[in-house]
Amino acid sequence: MNSTRNRRPMASVPVLRSRQLPSHIQTGGQRGGRCLIGALSAVLACASIASADTTVRLMSDGEETQIRFTKQFIRVDGAGDDGTFLFDANAKVMRVFQPSEQKYMEVTQADVEMMGKKLAGMQGQMADAMEQAKAALANLPPEQRAMAMQKLEAMSPPQAAQAAVTTTRFEKAGGSETILGVKCEKYRVFDGDKAAGEAWMATTKELGISRDDLSAFHELSTFLATMPNMAGWSTGPFAALDPTNENFVGFPMRFEGDHDMEVLAIEHEKVDSSVFSVPEGWKRMSPMDGIR
Image (cartoon, one colour):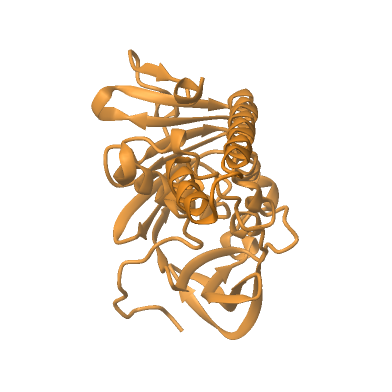
């Protein structure tokens, strides 16, 4: 049947939490981080929309997100000052905009690799220092040692949490619905063994495209999965939206669960090439600036 009922604002599936991105990629504080996270979630969810230049509008966390892309470039404009990013699939470069300051952060593959090495080294040094401190407290009376250990651990920065490695999978739930003129099959969605919600998925055939048209999104998913603390993406929710992944079943036109999403509109018109460029005169920042 056709979807004609009023629906509440929805967010893309699955939704990233801001703590999953390295802090140096979260621009503009926590608010900006959330905007960027929502934008990333939305763009990877839209990996199956069209073969030509395309503009997609959807609701994400009650805020509208616009995604424009070609086979090489992706641009996402989310809510807030820090909700815009560009990705160049050929160069494998991500650029995060800060319009209010006329700045942008450029993240290359080399940056990602260096960040991983730097953070691993810092964590190793901290672990060594903690072991030395514990050894120095060994001769204290038990009660004093416990109190000293408590203070020591409170002073230590938390170790970067490792992303849980789970696989998102889809099981047919029966039934179908037409959304924006596209036939969608209903699926139950699982994050590992845990039920995550229900999705109405459109196949690439129903959308009138081939999987080869989605190469930019495959490159983006692969690029993000190499970031520090993002190992879980190799088998996690975003990998399931990669058309080369064995768990790929299509594009979620709607999702209902802990987080909800619905696509509002899809347009196929030529996107001006300037949309995928950094404005002239903007200052470039490096994600390595905070951890040198």
